[in-house]
Length: 190
Image 1 (tube, helix red, strand yellow):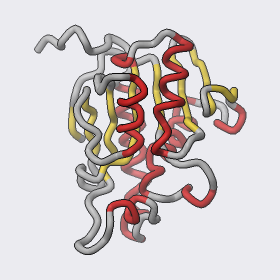
Image 2 (image 1 turned 90 degrees about the vertical axis):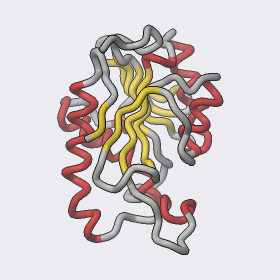
Image 3 (image 1 turned 90 degrees about the horizontal axis):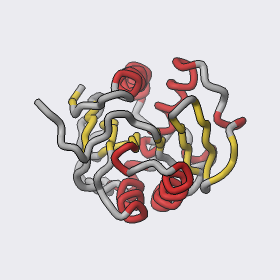
Image 4 (image 1 turned 180 degrees about the vertical axis):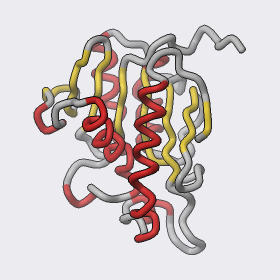
């Protein structure tokens, strides 16, 4: 099946959403940053603490790709993404945003092009600042909260003990999806 021309032939900007600071490190909302940690090891990248500081975050340019770790809070992530894409001259369609997703069951991944923010304020901010929703997303499933729990509280909590045990396999799978789809990405569920 032929892809629409709006989709990229190569992903040039890889963005990993989450909140900065140790308070949020192991929370569901920071799973995008956890995926970056896996990619650092897999690809032999330097630790993000040593990356250049710019664009309201930290970035690393590797060949024709830029890895971006916004240092804003989640709901302001778009400031970082917009500044970096403008500086490097990348199109939104050449951008992949890795983030947690309430609508995707825990343990599953969904690589998708465009669409709504699905309640994720980081994705909402990116779409607002880029002026379009036409960018790639790797939705890392964290699942819906149990009945009676607020989604805003749920995403800022740590994973359950059972989820913590399964998280390394999920994060490895996400890293594999990213590395397999930087050239000619295609939508898929894993």
